[in-house]
Each structure stands twice: as structure tokens, then as C-alpha cells.
Image (cartoon, rainbow, N blue to C red; front, side, top):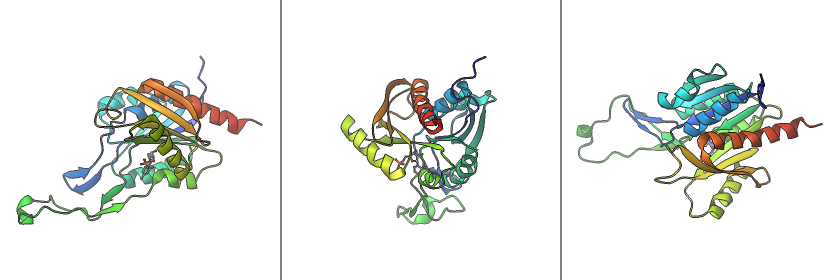
Length: 236
Ligand code: C5P
């Protein structure tokens, strides 16, 4: 049987959205369903890769796509701090790192150890003090293992395709990744949807893939670009 063009390649994928606790029952979160990242994990496994999927708060119905796949090891995580430590540990053995997770930029400075009660705030709305989270992707790039291929995602609210690419190019340079998958998001587009519309930028800022379709089709187009990066690194 043909094992595929990523046979034996170790791929780390992060997916979903991190949550930052406010108190024991509340959190700050985002609308990422994890569908795109899970589709990347499933597609990579189908192409022969050995996948570690760090799943940040992903519904079991979404994880079902990979749940019975022996080539995908799913590790659930909750907060950005958990994703940060598991990602750094898992990246050590990975040839390819794909950061599809939506990471909370800020966390709550002082997590209350009991439920914050309206009765206790004497009619005043409480104020949440936030502190900045570390940028996991930037630190993975800083600690890059050999010629590891590192891929980021960027979901942007934009007015035009030009603005999307412009913001993508700036982010690519800021993060130092090999490839950046950019897509427009908004109240209706991007998150939770079954389809996606993505541009993949390489280090020069060139669009190496443009694909509108199912999240699996987007995943395969992205993995084609990853395969090209691996071929380039492995060419004599
Ligand atoms: O800056 P922005 O959040 O748009 O960047 C998105 C990319 O950076 C994604 O690949 C995301 O997983 C990653 N990221 C991260 N750590 C953060 C914020 C974003 O790894 N604190």
C-alpha cells in the first residue's frame, strides 16, 4: 500500500481555541471550533504522517474525524499556558509544526478562587485586569529544531483581499514562520464553518496556494506547500 507523500514525517498540529479562566466557572475564549486544525491532522495522517494533535477545547463531535486514527495522538489542552508547555515538549520530536490554534492574546491577571458574585460587587461592574500571554509560535521559531518547517495561521477581519495579504505578509515577517495560512474572518465567515477560503504565503510573501473549499481541501493544499518546503530542505 502507498503510504503517501508524508510517510513517517512527524507533524505537530495545534487546533481549537485556548480559554483563560476568570473564576472556577467562567472563561475568556474565542469562537475557534478546531475544524480546520483537525482537518490538517486528518489529512496529514492520511498522507502517512505521524501526528500529535494538541486540541484546545475542541468538541468531541469535531475530534471524531481523528478519534479512531492510530496515526493521530490527541492531547487535550485548556489554557494558553498548557498549550505553551505541551507544544514546546511535542515540537522537540516534530519535523513539521502547524499552529492552527486560536491562542488567547491575554489572560486574567488574578483568577478568582471562588465564583465572582454579583451580590458582592455592590452594584459596580467588576473590571478584569489582563496580562499578555507569550506568543507560542514566535518562541517555537526561536527554538526551531534543525530545519523544522513551521507554519502559522492568521485569521483577520479585513475589508479587502489586498488588506488580507498585506496583514499576512507583515505577520509572516513578525513571526518568522516558513508558511502562513491567512483567511478572512468575521461575524459570519471563518469560524465554525465547514468551508474555508485561504491563501498560503511563503517566506518571500508570495502566494503559493489559494484555495476555497472544504477544510479538508484547504488542509491538503497547505500540506502540498509543506511538502514543497521539505523537498527544498532535503534537496542536495
Ligand atoms: O498574532 P496572531 O494571533 O494573529 O497570530 C496567529 C498565529 O500565531 C497562529 O498560528 C497562532 O496559533 C499563533 N499564536 C501563538 N501564540 C499566541 C498568539 C498566536 O502561537 N499568543
